[in-house]
Image (spheres, rainbow, N blue to C red):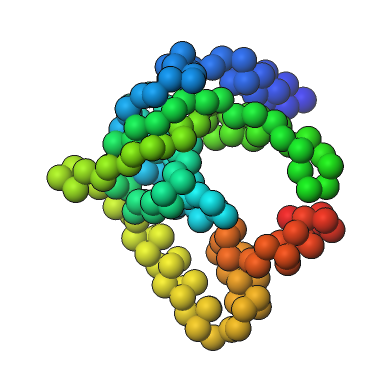
Length: 178
């Protein structure tokens, strides 16, 4: 009971304390830089990835569909916003802000310009190698199994999110599978 209470208190402190320095610039155009700490996701009309600056993590949306390599150093220029709740396909309200706070992400930047700094030494050598191995497995599974079977196996075994066809993904969401 004590540990559960400590966990609840810690969660509420994290939710209330918004340690983001960039949140002061909501609605403004800013330039910031940091290391890419997530694989870029390919969305329907954009790409999305997370950078870590000296102080915080920031979710980056790019309409130009730029896919920087994990661990690379990038400079981002764009408009700062805070996450907003939205209505899902199943008529439920999804609290996007709380979803991102669990990963200590308080702001989103809609990037107009992204520059990669090749002179900076990439971080996270071990993580980059593990992602290389994961990508190798994804390519081998896709070679051996036709779509959507290979995509489903990649999602189950390796956590791949963006490989399922939209219709099949929507069916899984409706049934509560994902």
